[in-house]
Image (cartoon, rainbow, N blue to C red; front, side, top):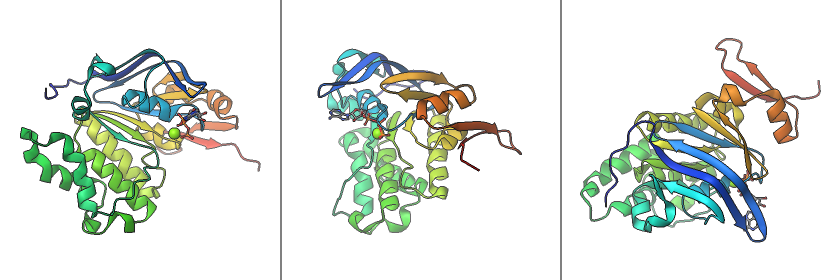
Length: 266
Ligand SMILES: Nc1ncnc2c1ncn2[C@@H]1O[C@H](COP(=O)(O)OP(=O)(O)OP(=O)(O)O)[C@@H](O)[C@H]1O
Ligand SMILES: [Mg+2]
């Protein structure tokens, strides 16, 4: 069954009272989160807070020990793997892929779920536009394994974009990127949301989250401690508390946009 139409505001992924156990540990303890079509949702929080675990559960890659995860309105267990692949695309954290293939072939792997379907006609256009969006067209023919870390990260993202799923789950897509490409990737996220996709993106850079996310969920020790617009949830007190590091939130002197910085000794 091919994916049906998606309207702005549709909940494309949802966790309700989600509990996830890894080994003997409860890593998520009653998390509620919704990813809506048309929205960039940033997941932030300290190392070990459970961001990747939440993303993995929304992707149906990790089972829930309690509560429920729905994708496109249905519990994840109701979808087959091929059906899910048409509906959600996942960029794992630090994808340590080492393909001995040319970059373009790696990006083209993102089209595999559409093989044998009408959408196969879009393969070339999807690959080309994903490569252009991530600025990797220039090394299309080079072996993936011969790229720098940041270049590889952009190719991995291009592969996910080429899949053209309406739900994008991106774990730290900017971690290895320079300043220009961090901005580029977040603009791509906004663009995909503007086109009606739901984008969930894990970020450590709170300034990027403030600038580009419609909504932010702050995770801390396996719980969602805030959920709202960046300007609402980013406060000195909450961030200082969550990160155990004094943080100040202030308006940009020229634009008024939310800025976040650690408080440092003078
Ligand atoms: N296989 C596992 N068995 C037991 N605990 C695990 C396992 N994998 C992860 N954890 C623990 O689960 C918690 C959440 O991990 P997760 O990877 O979701 O954190 P994160 O918020 O993505 O952190 P980071 O910012 O470092 O990527 C961590 O405390 C981690 O040590
Ligand atoms: Mg992580």
